[in-house]
Image (cartoon, rainbow, N blue to C red; front, side, top):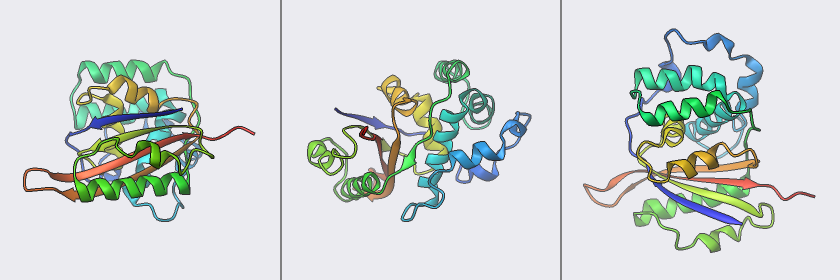
Length: 215
């Protein structure tokens, strides 16, 4: 089964979130084992630091949702964004959510993302025209997968929070469900920049979620 969702995402981000974290939040409750377990893309070749950061922060939200809400989400709400119904809804979701598994990078999934991101960057706005054709390249390994299109950020942390909060996404509920779904096992992600004209330019991202075929 295949699902795709088109999500324009435009929001303010900090260029170096990893050096911005501060304040009176329970950061000390994160332990080295959690951080190591979440950093599944650390040694994955051919992936940018921000693409790896997307793995890291999304996995932290999946691995320790309650603590993620108390630290990263609360810090983001207090320092970068502001409290809204969307942030309150996400916090309530995370505070009551059971941990789910981390997502692992996959070469085939990532290659599909990179190819799609390149096409989007070269030809402009994104659509689902070749969704079935692209899916054929991974369907034997991942019979169930979903795709999220992102437009407006290439910062791994900002993208994670922006998609989870979903304030500027018309399909935010479906997007959040995909991001936190326990059934996904693997992930591919690729960010690229494109320039269509002076008014229409910026980063695009392709995010693929796969559920590996059971033996």
